[in-house]
Length: 250
Image 1: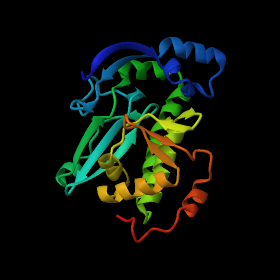
Image 2: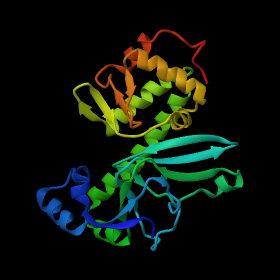
Image 3: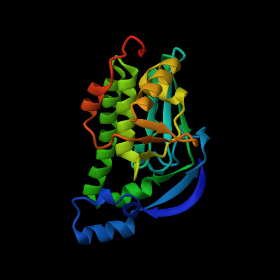
Image 4: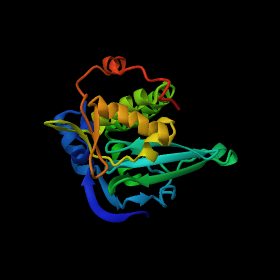
């Protein structure tokens, strides 16, 4: 099994939002019975991500903390999916056609993280709590919806627009409110940002300069970011950026 054992966790204590729609009595029973093993994974390449679970009946891994990336490389061009706390993943599931097309699929942790293993025991106990199973399915659907949004963002002609909307998304999902903006506690370098939004690194540098000059983002010395427009209408922000399409492109 991958990672270092880090004890166990009551699933509903780790993710209280999974309990929505449950009455108090059901909630109390579920809290006592739904206990998952926790594994800690260090930053860097997650070499064992695709390792098959011990039992074929496994709902997946629920990310408790840390920033994860799933990178697809096709014809030497990387594309990154960013994941974090609250996401439900099944990294051992890799469609066969990907291998046939020489597509590589790898996972990396940008910071140390922890996952709750929703194994066969959790799955068996969860049978008595269909509302919680539904909430877990919502996590899977939400991830697919984000990927649809991600695809739409990558179609925007201007890299600064793509970047701004990506920062907005990350700020809403994982941001920490501060007096000067929303802190995004994820270390994203230029290479990762380029792969995340389908751009080249020189274009990312130009786009970051544009957004920084506009006072919309700021990078900290530790590699994390602060977003300063979380409460503003994103479309109004985009419209307010001077047209630089001739300079900022793919």
